[in-house]
Image (cartoon, rainbow, N blue to C red; front, top):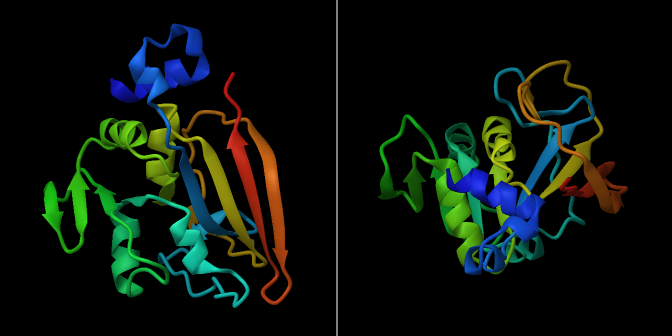
Length: 196
């Protein structure tokens, strides 16, 4: 599988073969808001607990990415919330249940790992893995996730959709940046995935 090849090359560049490894330029960053108890949505998929901090520059954040990759449930949340608070980016929705094709401002695909591996070869800016946790777990299994950015919201939900559902591989992380937003209490933590 393409994703497994990418993972092997990323973990051990000497085993990479020629141009494929050298063109793997874009980083896939899982960037989400999460409660202190590590849920990205409440028990009913609710997200009304995530404040819009006026000091977070969403326009700049969106500009730092080449595109957005998300799963079906995240797509439904994205549409229900009115879409992007920043500049429009190309969107790829990974879903095994929705038909493939381009519609409603997004491209729908079935094979998430293969398509993300293709994007990583083609793009030169980071790719935003917008959610959700199940897609994150699937792409982490394939060795395609390069970074994790979590905006920790000061609330305990007690249940909901997990940041990283059970069954995923262990991902060692290295903290690269942290920022506190006093108005909302949000702390943004940026990590690189450490390759063995």
